[in-house]
Structure formats: structure tokens, C-alpha cells
Image (cartoon, rainbow, N blue to C red; front, side, top):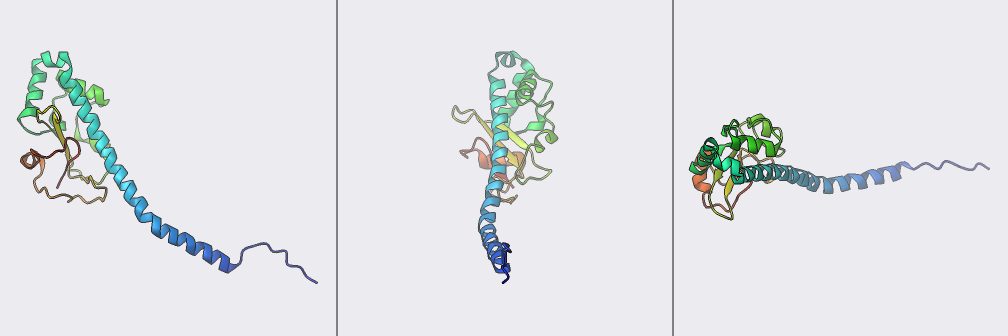
Amino acid sequence: MKTNKNKGYSLVELIVVMAVIAVLVGLLAPQLIKYIEKSKAAVDQQLLNRVYVAITYATEDPNVVQDHASMNEIENLKNGPVRLDNIDDTTLFGQEVLDTLGWTSFVQSQYLDELRSGHTANSYIYVQYKGTADNPLAMWITYTDMTGNKDLTVGNLTATGPTAWQQLNTAPYDKLISIK
């Protein structure tokens, strides 16, 4: 009498396990991908928060307020949107912002490396001083996706760069605004 001591799995059992795993992957993968993309957009939001805090701190520094060249830079922020890479990093204001951010310059490549959501090489951070107590600065990143869908045409704004400010003037946003 032969006894079968083979304790392996049958082919049917292996196929059932693989089918269950395939169904689970099919159900969970789209949600997981969506959450990953949303987290990338959140990283962009955090970048803007850091820039927001750095600019706010610099404008409240007594040494910056007494520096004529720095006050001219701050006035430029009041007159219209300014690309972050156009802020003069030789002024006390610019140096204070760079020190707070831990950056060496305002060049575009400095912050493009930190963007995680869908963006293009034409993505820029724009800043404008709005002057209200609850929303002193408006900031946005052009050509980026804040929804986490890697859709660079998100939103109903059609202008790019500084001309978009007219559309954003009454917007309640003070951080991440995506413009196509």
C-alpha cells in the first residue's frame, strides 16, 4: 500500500489564489494610484506653504523693512504678480526668503525639482501681495495639476502667468492655484 506524502498545492488551488489576488489588485489599484497622485499635489501645496511663510517672515523683519532695495522688491509684489525667479536675491528681502527656504537662489530649477504633481518645464511660481489681513499673499503654480490627475488643463481659467491675476483677484485661494 502506497501512501501519498506530497503536501503541495494542487493546480486548482493555485489558480483560485491567483484569481483572488487579481481581483483585489483590480479593485485596489485605481484607488491607490489616485491617492498617490493626490499626495504629490499635497507636496506642491507644502512647497507653496514654505514659500508663503518665508516671504511673510521676510516682510515682517525690521531690517528688511528699513532696507530701501528690499522695500522696492516688496512694492513689486503689490503692483502685480511676480514670478518667484524674478525676485532679486541680492536684496536683504531676497536673502531672508532664501535663508528661510534653505535655497541658494530663486532660479526655476530650484523649485521645479521639488514639484511632484504633473507639471511642465513652463511651470512657475507666481506671488502677489493682496494686502488683506486674512489673505496677504496670493500664490499659484502655472501649468501644474492640483487635482492629482496629471491633467494639466484642469480648471476653467484660460489665462497664463500674470494676466491670470484679473481672474484670480476675488478667488479665496492663498496657496495652490492651478492655471492652464
